[in-house]
Length: 76
Image 1: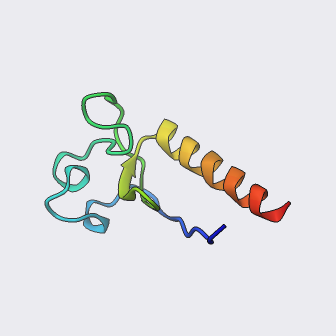
Image 2: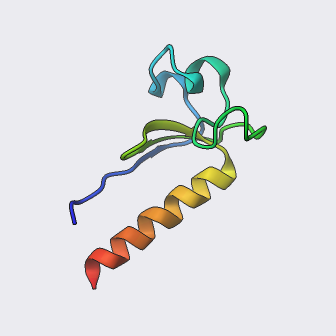
């Protein structure tokens, strides 16, 4: 398993994202998608393989849980 680096920027920072991205222009949760989530982003996250995403609180929790499960799998 290759190491995975996740970077979390809090609070949400549109400048962290591509200026033309949905995350930067619409300031919505791009992890879930603007059509599926009406919550505001609380963080900007570099999250492989998804790249840079904006995350609402629920998405951020899911990203951290996913990262922790991958980390603990690699430690066994």
